[in-house]
Image (cartoon, rainbow over all chains, first blue to last red; front, side, top):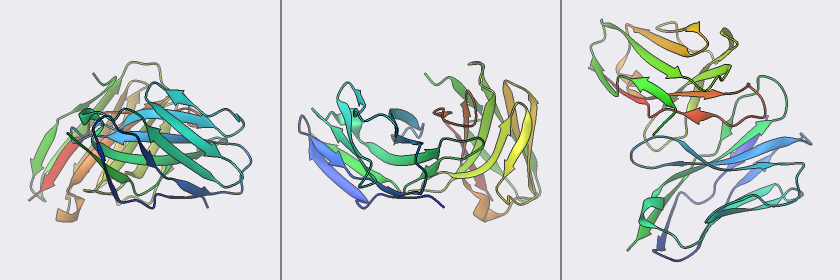
Length: 115
Length: 113
């Protein structure tokens, strides 16, 4: 079974600074997908970024980028130029590349951006 | 604005009541999901529908009854719930059940008295 571990329950960062959220996972699959979801207090789960395991290039979306290290099974999220609106719960998630497989979530990291 | 719409936003019900949660998406997605989320915890998968057929039931108690009337709608019928069922219930959809990201609704905050 796949597992996803987020070792930082809570983090804080000053506005405009950079912060990195860590995520590790365990799987025997060779192909899979990794996601970061953001859940602000408004409670909607928002997809931040997605990475296909077969792609070596790290995904980026504006201020959000990942450091994907397949051999180490590590998938960290870097947020640059942090904004107050980035305050949220961040969940790392794993999905196998085969039919009918659910998302496996980590326990989440609560990020607070401080003015 | 979310592309997955859930109603109601909030629901308070007694343990003997019958109510339904509704979820709607118009993105042409063929997979839809129900999750339960307790405070400060990740979502827990309850049900998965693929092409309007139930494909995954994660051992959910029978007091929760899902229904998929068509490819755009997903309901969750509630009956004789317990206080521990109080939680945020999230609906999500994706193009298929594999290798596609899921899009979530805002959720229904359910409180059982």
